[in-house]
Image 1 (cartoon, rainbow, N blue to C red):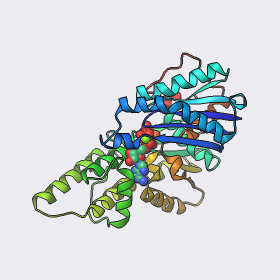
Image 2 (tube, rainbow, N blue to C red; image 1 turned 30 degrees about the horizontal axis):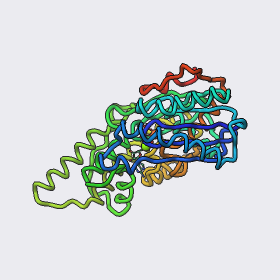
Image 3 (cartoon, helix red, strand yellow; image 1 turned 60 degrees about the vertical axis):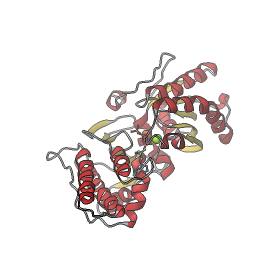
Image 4 (cartoon, rainbow, N blue to C red; image 1 turned 180 degrees about the vertical axis):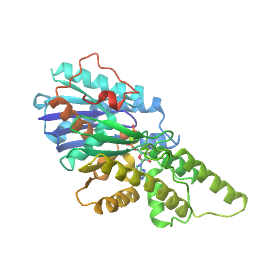
Length: 338
Ligand code: ATP
Ligand code: MG
Ligand code: FE
């Protein structure tokens, strides 16, 4: 089985070939970060234009590197949502055109299902499992009882984890995207500031990061007024400590409650070294529990993860026809099988 994956939901134009749902033959990512940097965030109009320019080249390169021709393909998997509508459309229309031209099955993939399935490129999944999704737009705890099944048991009520990282990074005058910069600074600093932890109601698996963000703003503002200079390293370390403590604790409680065999880490913030370390420590203290974390390049947006998820949905008989449309608000529960 050779699945071509296509991903254009945000600011990376990506195509990949994955064999049998697990083996990456090629994984091409054209990042637009340099174009969006000076605006401090992704500009949708610019993103769409870049996707149009890059998509054909990226797909050709993915096929070439994998030494696979269209006639070898089993199907084409494409991110149909959620994301920026104009960005998603480029991938969806390209996939539809190629599927029609080469008479190939078309498989729609939810972007977050893709992030989760990046883990299958590392290790076989064992159910039931809990996935912690931490990305630029999502912070969710997901229970999976089998392949293709997703139950959102907790989600953020305000900012996503990655969004919080990027906003705090901005306050510290760090370049966009700020997550990796905070990660780097946090390594050099000490968590000396006691920022709040949003545990929310007893038993809730939801998250909230806006209070933490406000606390950082106030802390910096007050220090400024007093003419003090806070060490950015310490602010970063303290912020990271607050975020990871809540993420790790809630994930561990969920794993216990749902009798999970595995915890999967997914999304761009899964690249965070502090989070990876803290979660590894917590999982090590529980005997039967296994932790899977994708390598850095599979945590952020890529198309190998879309092909990996697409393979599973293909096997479950999921197909789209040429009426497939980009759905910027596609929900994971709706996308879930049963
Ligand atoms: P979504 O997947 O929710 O649609 P997205 O695709 O924009 O959003 P990803 O590409 O999955 O998000 O992740 C990007 C986010 O990950 C950014 O907010 C970035 O700052 C953050 N990030 C990347 N590396 C790190 C890191 N080492 N530490 C913390 N955050 C990081
Ligand atoms: Mg991105
Ligand atoms: Fe993403």
